[in-house]
Image (cartoon, rainbow, N blue to C red; front, side, top):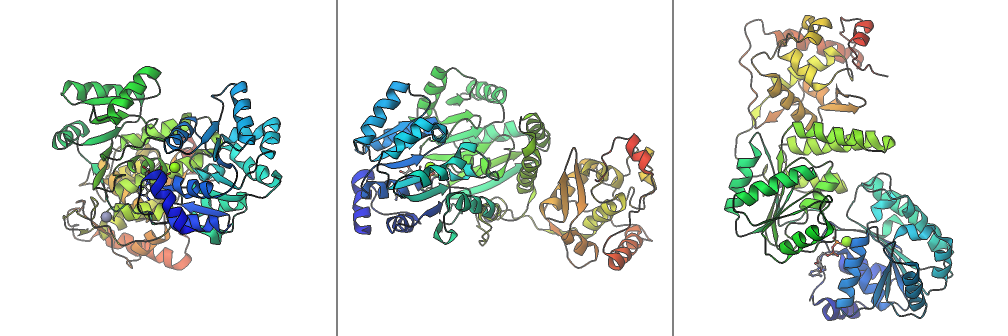
Length: 556
Ligand code: ADP
Ligand code: MG
Ligand code: ZN
């Protein structure tokens, strides 16, 4: 059987060997198992259902969420000499009818359909008349509320499957491997989790890095100059950003295309073609660009602004290096981007999903602040599997010495405890630590706290960034409500107790403390209460009415 699969791979796709996981996935389906296939973007999931579809009798159905993606896939199949068709809202009723008639006559090996079709009673009746050996659910994370692209119609797929006269083999495919999403997919489609195929999420040819504390434009110009002969994508947050950046680079003599949803179809398509055919070397785009694009020689993907979550980031960055050659993924980070993303989340229509979206944004920010291996951080995020440090990313190759910042961490942590868990945001904590005269600090009598001004040789900005770092190390947690409120995590308590050191490469060290070290006394007090009651009594010296007056959100 696998022999036949291999010869089909060669015949239709021109590849001589399977990639990691493809063979297992195909085998599992050929054995008749309902199967979940989790592979990173660009890993080669399509072949995992297309080859079984070629080996089974009848018309396999592929559920796919995007009209453009469907068309590209079908075009590619037709080119490879495989009869296939798609059915979605871009077709007239007459066209749909014609294609369904052909399908009934068994003219297609694969029929791609949009999930919304399953909501039509009439269409379902027509499906019942086909002989369907395999149902492939592409981008299966759309089934899950925890995925980044929830599509309610995906939840109808299982009903469609159970209505078919003969039970088909079901294959779900996705690049999102978080346990929650996997569980949802398996539950919704009735797949035994033991029949999951997960390939490694590390992309060995990609080097990730985060650039912060630098002006982005000069950095970008310099980077593009060094990579003049290479092809790459620059993702910017908004259409306006894309337009501006495009004009600027253009003026600098760079051969650059652009792509965003606000352009005319004509301009968008011609820009895309120029880039795909290497007439331009740089594509500046919003996240609208890239789904279904299969350009293999992309040597770098630069994010000019912070993406909204890790899923979008890895999807977009993962477009680099599909040919397996070394490529770079660079994220240019600036703290004000977090506000922009928060604003966008706030503006979005789905209020129910806001807390989840904010949590995901926080994890994206954590990625920017971590000093651990970035590839490992990604792998852990998507699969909760572990890997040794990659040795290639910006953090693995950062040769700066780590310094012990335990003392500074303790100052911050005890200040958070003093101000009350989940009561304030990081900016106010930083102001207290640096001894700010800000009205809020004074009105709330926060200047009476023993930790007030304990880091006054630092700027509030530096301390805020240090707090971000402590968040990325899981020493401080964030609760997302109307405002993000911070609190000390169990790990942070270990640090306070002196049981765990903290190291950081970026300098934050404060001057040696004067005699009668205030931190010493402070730690003694905080530790005592931590040890005695686990729960620290709020060292608050302000009244709750004062809090209300200041419109500071209180814990529920
Ligand atoms: P995914 O859906 O997992 O993101 P695709 O199925 O679109 O990935 O495949 C990504 C690219 O990898 C395509 O260009 C595809 O032709 C190529 N590819 C898939 N399988 C192989 C293989 N066995 N050998 C070489 N290239 C492959
Ligand atoms: Mg795919
Ligand atoms: Zn690394």
